[in-house]
Amino acid sequence: MRITTKFWIGIIVLIVLSPLGLMLPDHFKAGSAWGEWSVDEIQKFVGYVPQGMAKLSSLWNAPFPDYAFKGWEDKGLSYVSFATIISAAVGVIAVIFVLFLLGKMLAKKGD
Image (cartoon, rainbow, N blue to C red; front, side, top):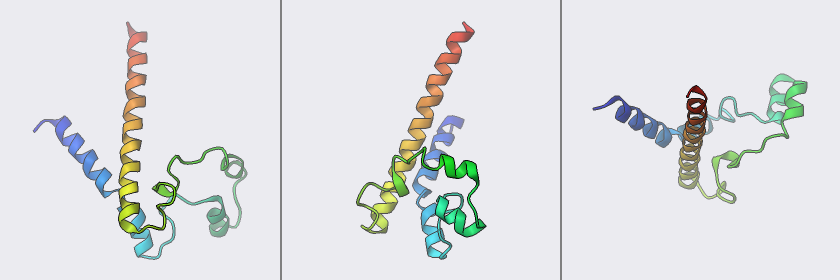
């Protein structure tokens, strides 16, 4: 089996396993997934919100808030898991597209 085939199989496995990152914290009553805290949660954990974080927190809104489509948050675990897998696949495709364009731009500069 070629190394690129193994790579893509690994990426697909990670995409399919991506709902675990949301299910496990919920299962163990750990709150939000690690590193995905809102400004309010940072305030609760640390006691304050760093000035730069407070200023930049409203700058970016996720295309799929909570990794789910609008209205799917309350439909159950199977819907949220499916939306998380779709979100992961869209993220992988976006990264591949950006890297492809960057590679094309850098290759033209090297000619």
